[in-house]
Image (cartoon, rainbow, N blue to C red; front, side):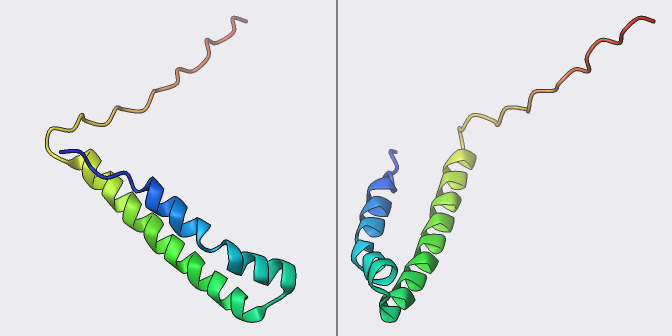
Length: 80
């Protein structure tokens, strides 16, 4: 079953904050700064939601097992 890609909603969410970012950073509106802080918390929460979703998809039954990390070999020893 295909899973909905959250990128579009994330992009739209961030784009909707542009006015308040402009008001705070370019005009010094402190109320807009409070909203920007609120948006950053929303972004953090959304990022965690997406991370958990990605992990759930990866761990779903039938998913390919994770690859083992590559092991680096030590360089050959120089002969004396």
